[in-house]
Image (cartoon, rainbow, N blue to C red; front, side):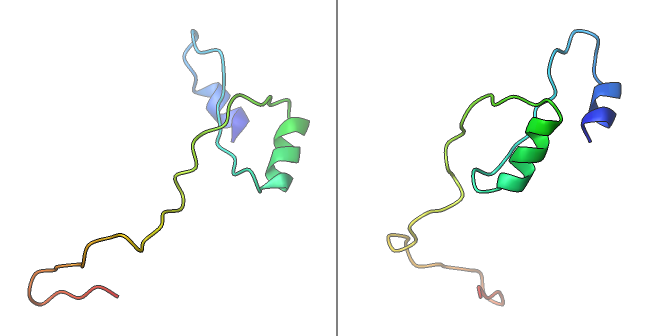
Length: 65
């Protein structure tokens, strides 16, 4: 994927960026072996407490499972 992305980059682009979940140690190791360097930590937006959500109201004929 890095090679393909690099081939399609504009001349003024310096980096190939990719995302990595903190717990994906295998992908992290492989990216390091390919020469990728740690850039930054993103906010964790993958979980949310659902206990404070209002009741779901859906149009007639639809259901939420």
